Length: 457
Image (cartoon, rainbow, N blue to C red; front, side, top):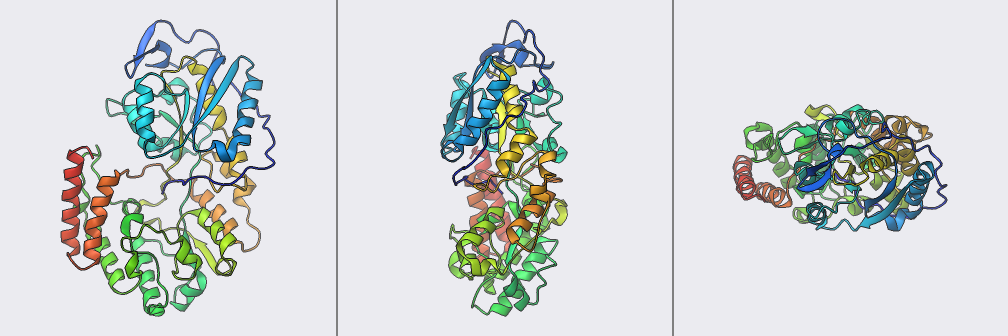
């Protein structure tokens, strides 16, 4: 599940006066002579083996993604604190709109040797930048870089380099979470105990079926479009969607994929989902708030949305653990911070990146009432803000639930291109309409996905 666009206004943020430590970087020469990173001439200390050294001085550029409008005060405070701790350093903040051309734009900047020194990235953009060698290998350039982060998150926040090896070219930053949200009244009418959420995806589907039988068309369990569930459900079930190198689809070899499609077709036919929602791009947020479906969005921020927009439904809302299924834990899709290997002040850039993502700054931002995001550092997740719940407030319960699951989550999620995902979803939709058997739909979905993957789509 991806972290959506952050909205809201930031009020009353006190300028941070946190210590901006050198982050394991020592003073002195950062290396001599030229080397190359992605075809750009760089200081040889930026690439290869050996920890990065150098004074924390010089002007660097920091790029975020669509954050300046709503969070200017916060990030200006972080920058001011860093510059105060390092008088010889200065940070210029720019903000990318984060539109559909984001990856293309940043890859072009990298190829022109003008990639920002410190950059906010998603995995889709970090992947090609890492493969081409445009980002520092952070675990090599600062062996202590992993210390603040949840181990599972750090260990899985890797990208492939040109040789195919996994490298830590990014620091995990803020992330979302996933949970079950449901109308407790509707579940009880269906004979489902809200206090005992299912532990498997198929167990959840069985509960959807119970809702359909009890509702008799007056309301529904969830929305039909499988685009919200592929590949998320398969990841949770530990169904391998793509080969290890990402060049081919392999899910048809797992019989559970066909069983999953059979369940979706059965639920759609039995009325667990609105018929007109099969190709709708709408998620469950609005219909849930209107009392039309029993299960809401899996995004924790959705719970606050219901609280603000539908108090009567909020009073009936419960939260539970999204089924761990065969995977045994959840997966996250964090936003990342990378440091350009082409930076002329790499020691300063790395120091600022680590300062930005340290526990103090992550906790401070995640506590702000304008956002519903979660930190990736151990100390932050142990903060009472995330661990303490008073009363039966669903939003506070959701925050605690997600913060607990993030302690064991990984960042390993299957990344499908829009074209490949659409091709798979289209075949599942045909099966749900009864136009194909589940087995045929899965076979055809894999064939079509492989055609697109061969084309590089």
